[in-house]
Image (tube, rainbow, N blue to C red; front, side):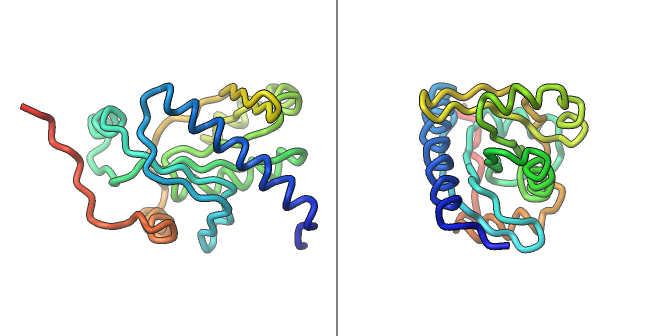
Length: 175
């Protein structure tokens, strides 16, 4: 079923507001944004409302210690829902095929109601964020582990889709 024009406008507005708030939140943590995309389609895995691609040397070095293979860009996918959180969780689970982290973003009051299902989110490997669009506040209720995407092919398709997949070198530590 196609989304109504009004519902699509509401979703785009929430996604843009969250993107601005998340940029501010990430900048305060020292993360370097490389790129982001809205409504990013990955064949077979859905259309992510927002994809955040970053390269933070500390994250890459920490991940390299725990994994033998590391992909060049850390991808975080977000699914925004204003009501149907179960559908959003299902979509966010699929995003784990191409993302290091996947989050479901809900309005703060709904996110509080969903807290009872924290074990389900943890078992699914999906994070939960409460977002207040009016204040722009972000509260990460569940932070998923940063893990290699489940499908390197899907990851490469994502990177191609947002024009990021190209030869990339991780900066060598300065001596």
